[in-house]
Image (cartoon, rainbow, N blue to C red; front, side, top):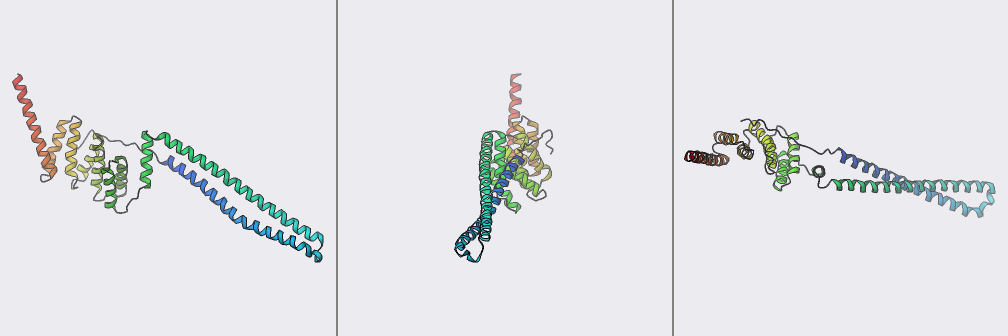
Length: 276
């Protein structure tokens, strides 16, 4: 069975903008950290110089063994070194303060921009992308698929679709790939996005016919065709389901629907004859 004439498109909010903002914040935080390390390394030198100056001053009363000029030169050198170190500290403190101020302003602007996006499609997509990136992703395919299924059951369809897509990228040949396509189709089905759902169901039917989800892919395809006013395709899906998976629960439901369709058809035909 070929689900032709139906296309599905997806629009993804690029994560590059968010990553750029995060990288910029990280760089500023690293600059602050580097300056703090330099400051921490400089402070002991200041303490050391202060100790030297103090020692020199205490030794003035014993200067009888040294010339006044020698003591003066040594003292002046220590004072200059101390001044230079203090200047470095003041420079570091100023740079740290400026970077902290810039980082705070940047974060406020970023929060404002994300706030402006809230409620829009782009904002929702960005939020979903951030939650996906923060999500714990099990290395085991079965467990990872279970995470997607759980999000879908909770009604978090956008996030679950993102997980299904990631699963299919990582495990395209896995035995559960058909289930991932079906799960993704179900998220569209539950949002009444039948064309997108049919594209996923079609992949299950054509490429994963042995999947346990294939019978329901036929059944829900029939539902979608019905919603799209494509009655003949809906009947064909039900008939193929009964033919291909006769012992499945989905086939039992398909038979009941076909019976109802036949009744409706006969009733409609009888009504037309009476009117004539």
